[in-house]
Image (cartoon, rainbow, N blue to C red; front, top):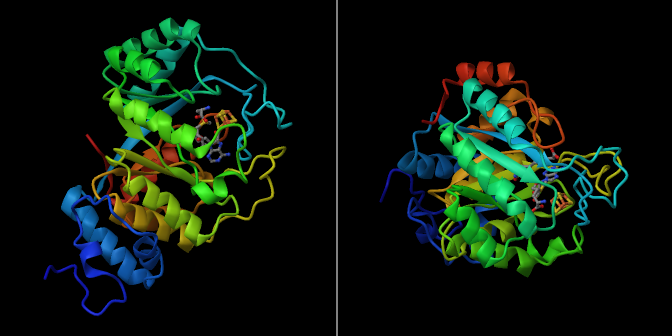
Length: 332
Ligand code: SAM
Ligand code: DTB
Ligand code: SF4
C-alpha cells in the first residue's frame, strides 16, 4: 500500500491509486471525493500532484482579448454577450502588430503561454488568415500559443493546428444538467463536438468550467467526471470562479464557499492527475491564503497580468510577491 493510501476511508481505494489517468469514473466515486474530510482530500490531491509534477512550479499564461464584445451567444456569466447591458465597448479583431506588442510584453513579464480570446460564436473563414498570422507571430517570439474563438469545425481546427497553434481553450463550463440554465444558444453536445475536432486535429485541449453560477456539488462532480471520462484528458483544466459583472444575468450570484472551491481544485487534481489545473478567473476576489490552499490542492497554473479578457486580475507585482512568499517558481 502506498504512503498515500488511507485504509478504511468510505471511498473506493482503487479509485485513488492515484497518479495514473482513468477514464471510467462514476458520479458516485467523484462525489465521494468531494465528501472526504478536507484534510484527507487535500492529502490525496497532494500525493497525486507530487507524483506527477514539481509541486512548487506554477505555469504562467497571459490572456489577451483579440476581439471584444458584441457576441451573439447568451452565456449568462459573460460580459461580452450582446444580449446583456454591461456597458462594455465592442472592439473588432485587433491588428497583428498590436497583438505582437502585447505578446512581447507578456513574455518580458515572465509568461510562457499567450492566450488569445475572441467573443465569437465561431470564427468565420475570412478571419483565418489574420488568426494564423497571429499564431505564427506569437510563436516566433518563443511563447506557447493558445486560442479560444468559440466553436470550431474539424477543418477549422486543422487550419489552426497547421499554423502551429499549441492549445485550444473551449470550456464545458458546468454539468450537462445545469448547462441549460446558463446558456441556450449552443448545446453541451456542440461543445463536446468542438473538443473532439480540436483533439482530432492534434491540438492540445484546454477545457474546464466556472464555479459560482448557482450549481450544486453534484454539478461540480459531474463536470469533472465528464472531463475525466473524455477519451483523452485535457492537458489544461481551467477552474474559474465566476466574476460577477453588473448587467449579466448572474451579477448577483452568490460566490462559492472558498473551501468548496479548494475541494473542487483538489478533486480535479485527483481525477485529472497529469493535467495542468489552472486557478483561472476570480483571483481578485480571493485572499492570498485561499490561493495558497488552491496551490496546495494541486492547482499549478495561473493567468498572470493585470487583465483577464475584459475584467481585472491581480497586479503582476502582487503575484510575484505571492510566488516568493510561497516559494513557488514559474514552470519552465
Ligand atoms: N467566445 C468563446 C467561447 O465562449 O467559446 C471564447 C471566449 S469565452 C470569454 C471563454 C471562457 O471564459 C468561457 O467559456 C467562460 O468559461 C469564461 N468566462 C467568461 N466570462 C466569465 C466570467 N464572468 N467569470 C468567469 N469565467 C468567465
Ligand atoms: C478560461 O477558462 N478563463 C479565461 C480563458 N479561459 C479564456 C477567461 C476568463 C474570462 C473572465 C471574464 C472576462 O475577463 O471577460
Ligand atoms: Fe460569447 Fe464566449 Fe462570452 Fe459566450 S462566453 S457570450 S460565446 S464571448
